[in-house]
Length: 159
Image (cartoon, rainbow, N blue to C red; front, side, top):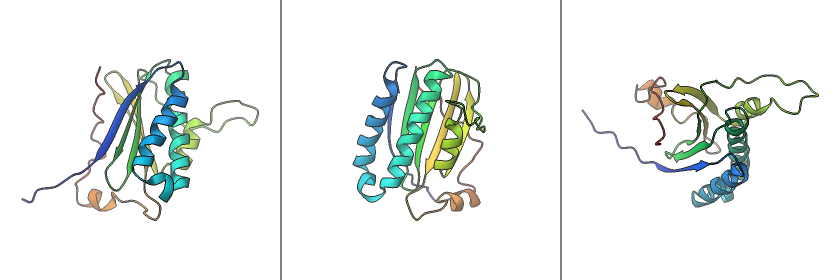
């Protein structure tokens, strides 16, 4: 049996309810800069930053929780994951035209190439995947070969 080699770069940080959304965007932009995405994929950077804002906002406003933000670049997909302390799962919904909120997950669904939510022992993790421009589903071949298990749970964040 051959050995599989996985290379990934990742970062993780906790963002408190007070002031965490702006700090989360800044922190994310720094790491996207380090990947060269701000120069090569500015539209994708904007989509990632909006997604980070929406996911952190959901954790703070709806879960009344600090948010654990994890970014992982595996060479084919940037995985943006936010863990919070609430077991209530988000659901994309059509917001009333007069409503001030209720569009966050619909925005994430529109911007990300794919997204998912997983319940965990303490809360949930919402993850969105962003492929580099010009690539459709870079994990399609891995899934077809059985190398990715979509049912595999996301690891529980430390703490």
